[in-house]
Length: 557
Ligand code: HEM
Ligand SMILES: [Cu+2]
Image (spheres, rainbow, N blue to C red):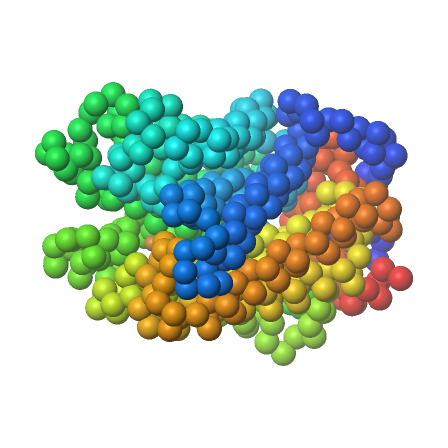
């Protein structure tokens, strides 16, 4: 089959004007205020990855402290800052911007658009990220150091100001969250407008790839729920610096109000992260099994159903906050309801893989590893949703285990899978399969070694956010620390692979995986306006059943 004939749609050869050599000369554009969504996508990914390395370094210092029961490596206030900034960086400067980056790159291509709806707003949204990040990291150098109240930043703890200065780590933490929040709201407006208005002719809603459904869902959630966080951060700022008393219990303020507003966003945000990740699984798994995605419509509807559902579960983070019994029971039931749309998806991926011939290239390894790890994350989530169980393990390492199975073992693994999958499109080069597989196995082993021990530790009663602990917990802690160092090592083959392949890798064809998305019908990398001619879509998504594509490797040779 000729490369430009994909599923009944003939697209013009688009390799013509913008050759690889030309785009290589243009590497400088990555350092400028550029409005091309593809450039912005790469800018986001590289910036987020840089913060991931910083956040990872902080985590390894935390784990180095915890390798012995005594608090003997760093002093306690600094330890508090380490885990506070680690969590904040990983959430607001790694997960959110890397997803914004991948979606920025892929979504306009996948819907057949020339760019995002508001390219300048897109660029402003991106540039606020390094600004927010630098504000946050620089707070380590303030007198009194960086914020110490954990990533939730609950008052009254966050209202204590150990340095006594007006300029302090807490203030910088709040400013950074406000800056990053404004950036995310801008980006959300842009994504929603783009997906609603800029779809190519024939690209109906039920022809959208799940990644696009997921981006629409996640960005709608950002629009609806994020103002609660940005607002509560500003209220906290008023308490901290202007003498307001929204949350100060000694002046009739209500610290629990902070918890409600914080989790009203920060529960939905976990779906802002994980739905696009489910989108990545839903792109990779069909491509490497050569099967259409099982139950496409149910998966699409399950995805969008999260917009309202996710707004009714936040108080499961507050079972132990003096929440009235009737409210706790209500939130227990609404939380467990989330297992239904989530279960539909896991079932769909499993059914897609079922009896297929698997092609285990690196993106597929990361996707399958990620789905497997999500089972641990989801099932421990359902356990925590049961209020009586949660009250036992609240504030212990069990929670830390649960959400790291989400944020590392599922989300970060899937992000790596997505980066390998779209790398040929982005760079016009193939990555090295051997290094990719090495990266996968080091990550898979390291992540389980690091985060599994947290479940037994939590069940045995080890609380989180402490730098010294009872010696009975030492064995599992040593394993977890070794795992974290292995995770540090696992990043090296990734960096080597990307750097080498971008410069020297084998040239990629426009569709190296013989995948069905529109992004694979244009050259690698795509020309400035993505397609030489606006594509017309007259085929269903994940049309793998009909075409008789063979093994992607064989077709490539
Ligand atoms: C069926 C799915 C899930 C259920 C029922 C669930 C339930 C819970 C509950 C009850 C807690 C709070 C426990 C406590 O503090 O005592 C929790 C914590 C957490 N969950 Fe989940 N969860 C689920 C899936 C997810 C997903 C998909 C993500 C991320 C994408 C996620 C991320 C988190 C995070 C980050 C925390 C910890 C926040 C913190 O305490 O610092 N969870 N989960
Ligand atoms: Cu939650």
